[in-house]
Image (cartoon, rainbow, N blue to C red; front, side, top):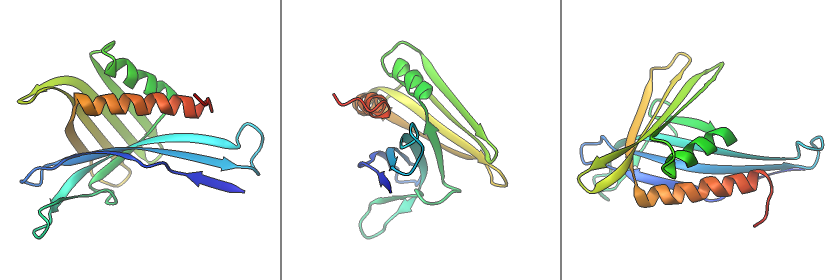
Length: 167
């Protein structure tokens, strides 16, 4: 029997009035399959999804985002080594982080570096993806220091879940 669990994702929204905003989310997926071979019965995966703003609803004044539009979004599956690199950056042990993933359908790149905006220190986040037969998709936004603390905790929790350690 196969069971897939997806705990609530963590989303960061950065809308702008000129529709130039962006959003991203961290998503955890846990698959348990009692019919799979021993050692492969439990799989824990983390995905970072980023998307461009697609407009503003005239009635609600809320921004809309292209989560399900492949021409407006990009996804990177985050592995354990990636998590270590991200945590080292978030804990100030690295000045920046560059993750590059390639498969037979294309590639995805994530770049993060420390930055400054009018409200103070932030993290500059950029994800770009080039998929076979599609134009380059590029998404960027800032991550606040508070948001980065939540991301760091979620990354640590992923490592514990990946190894099935109950703390």
